[in-house]
Image 1 (cartoon, rainbow, N blue to C red):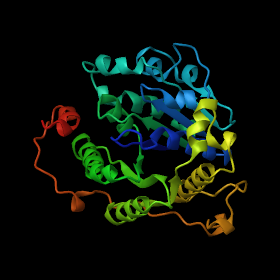
Image 2 (tube, rainbow, N blue to C red; image 1 turned 45 degrees about the horizontal axis):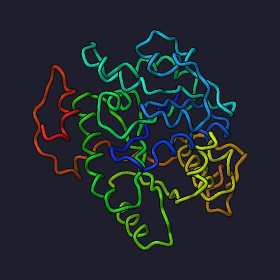
Image 3 (tube, one colour; image 1 turned 60 degrees about the horizontal axis):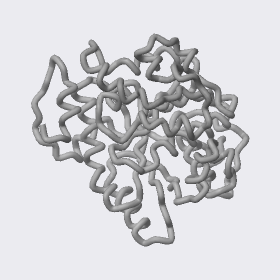
Image 4 (cartoon, rainbow, N blue to C red; image 1 turned 90 degrees about the vertical axis):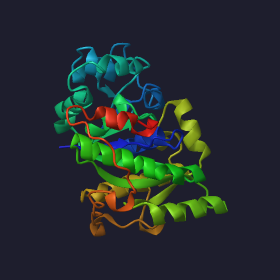
Length: 311
C-alpha cells in the first residue's frame, strides 16, 4: 500500500509544487511506483511535468464528473511516475462540494481506489485553507511542510501546526508530520542561516537534513515542462531534491535504489547502513498555546475552515 504524502503550507510561494513534482520524479527514478495528484486549481504541477490530457480528464472529473481513475491517471516522461492533472475547473469543486454529504472525503475515496497500485502518492495542495485542502489532508497519511528561509515563515509555523492539530482532533484523522523542509536556502546569506537554525530549534517535529537552495535551474525547469532531474540533473537544486528523496525513503525503512548521483562522498548514508527515521510525536499540543475552541460534533468542518478567520 502506498504512503500518501501531502505537501502543505498555508503560505504561498514556499516551493510546495516544486517539491511535490521533483521528489515524485526522483522516487520514480529510484524504481518506486509513484503517483502525483495535482490538487491545486492553479494546476502548476500539471504544467510543470508536461502532461497532455483531454479537457475532461482531470482530478475534478474523477471526483465529480464520473470519470474512472484510469481515465484521469496520465503517464509522464518517467516510466514509474504518473500524474492526475488538474485544471481551473477544480476551483468550482469548492462550490459543488459544500452541500454534498461527506464532502471532505471525496479525495480519500479516490486515493483508496488507486493506492494498492503505487508505492508513493503525493498530493500537491494549494496555499489556501478550504474544503479542497481538507480533502487533501484527510486523504493523506503524512504531510511535508516546505518552509521558506525568510522571517515570515517563522510566523506561520504555529498556524500550520494548529491546522493539522484541528484536522486530527476534530475530524479524527491521525495524520503524521513527516518533516519540515527548508526551501530557498542561501548559505551565503546570514539571514538564511539564522532562519534555518531557528526553524530547526523551534519546529517540534522532524526537519529534513537537506536544504533546498535558491536555484535558477529550479525556476527554469517548469517553463520547459520537465522536472529538474530531466532539465539540469547536476544542478544544486537537483542534487538537493535527490537527497530529499533518499531521506523520505529511509523514513519508511525501504531500500534505496543503486542508481543515484548522490554518494557517500556527498554526505549520504549508504543504503546498507540507512535506518528509518522515527516519526515525530503524535501531537503538537505540548508546543502549541491553543485557545479553547467550540466543538461541532455533527459537522466539524466549520471549525477548521473558519478557525483562521477569527470565527
